[in-house]
Amino acid sequence: MEAAGGPCSTLNFESPSDLFESLISPIKTEIFFKEFWEKKPLLIQRDDPIVATYYQSLFRLSDLKILCSRGMYYGRDVNVCRCVNGKKKVLNKDGKVHFLQLRKDFDQKRATIQFHQPQRFKDELWRIQEKLECYFGSLAGSNVYIMPAGSQGLPPHYDDVEVFILQLEGEKHWRLYHPTVPLAREYSVESENRIGRPTHEFTLKPGDFLYFPRGTIHQADTPPGLAHSTHVTISTYQNNSWGDFLLDTILGLVFDTAKEDLEFQAGIPRQLLLQVDTTAVARRRLSGFLRTLADWLEGTKELLSADMKKDFVMNRLPPYHMGDPAELSTPGGQLPRLDSTVRWQFKDHTILTVGPDQDQSDETQKKMVYIYHSLKNRRETHMMGNEETESHGLRFPLSHMDALKQIWDHSAISVKDLKLTTDEEKENLVVSLWTECIIQVV
Image (cartoon, rainbow, N blue to C red):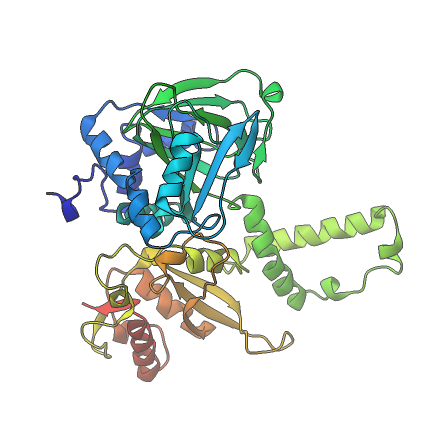
């Protein structure tokens, strides 16, 4: 069957793990994460006309005409550029993009067209990237690159993201180089005389797949004498390292420990901040505090995430849904009661986290359970950076955590079995969750 007149998908969307496994097929996921993830590139050349046809449907040069008619702007939605003498030359105009001008620059100036975040408009890319965000637990952005024959858009560079490339139209010649900054945390251009000889050199054709870790230096061009080339780069794991997670959780850990251990609240030595070098005594004291934090961490199940969890769920794609987006956030079915059985829905789009009560002062702050979800997120602003986003969800007293975990952990549970003191609390909890479309009655 063909959905909406397009070719049949060659990917398996039954679950996030099924989607990823079909994306890297025939490589198994356990092999991928053991041998390739954050280690080395993976090239899959399929020579499969069915996969090629499906990939070609994801984004075509001809799609730009329709998209430009919807009001695309230079810089925000589209970049036009060329690689000249090892440097990126931007050829953007001002304001709104007109397709005839875009095609003129493409044909006459041999310029590359970079289209930002096409999942905002292309349903199948939304479908793919939403599942990848569920699978990785990290934002997944994308860019489409359309290059005319005999041209190169970008100089050799490396990125701060894990990169998955799907070749959609035509052929693209790639060269990969050994990283100068492994698992890089920022984007950087590298000069040809510094990167040495390629470690990998190949040509991608429609249906082919390429992965390489962040920090991998790369450059790509469209061979002369051929038709234009289109590929989509899907990226993930930006600022998603153990170091980032440590920075995110350490503040909450220090705050909790300091409330129990007065040593953390004792003043630092006089004039410590005026000294050029930190004294041996101060270093030993800090080392002791870190050991105390490690011991505290070993003995607690509650780890406060300051920003990472909330930022992820606020900025990610909403669930893939072909109807009215409002349907996702409109309660449906039976209102839950004490004798109802309920189950969590959209679990891949919901997070539970513990945090301080935002309505109280620092001295009297109590912990609250926060539930954030992405059901009301706007696909149109996904990964656009400068667009305003807001959080959606609920908060409950910490005493409700066990009951929330019961619903989370069970495929279905009776409301009267929830671990809350009164029947009124049980019913109020499930009605609140149902109103937010987080649970349904089964």
